[in-house]
Length: 145
Image 1 (cartoon, rainbow, N blue to C red):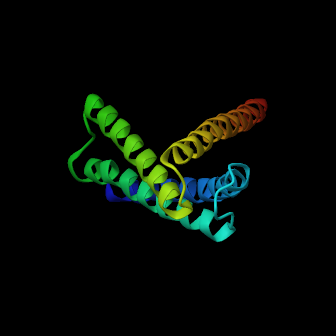
Image 2: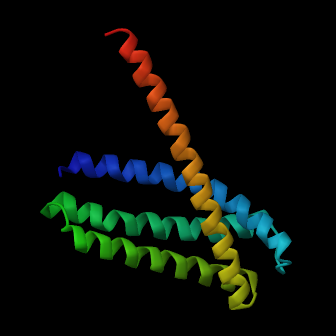
């Protein structure tokens, strides 16, 4: 993997982080009202999500930087690293919710779980949309062959 591939991967990751920053900030704002957190402001929601997003993006760059410098990670190692980083990201977001909203850890975990399930659903729907667009382009291109 060349340095240019690293920059492309970092850019794609940054775009994905920015999209989910907006979505997760909105979700956390709605959850804070629904779960009756002490602070229901937009600024707190986006501050929490912003810190978590930056940490997540930086963590995602580590395996990419390693691959750019030394070649691809072995599959089992890559799987372990991704699982480890998923747990770290979850723990960071739960702790940030706990810290910024002054709530119980159980409520923080529930808020994280709602955000996690919402992200799965939204990611699945976006994936279907992208696949449908790709198929439409493929059929359109096949007409001209």
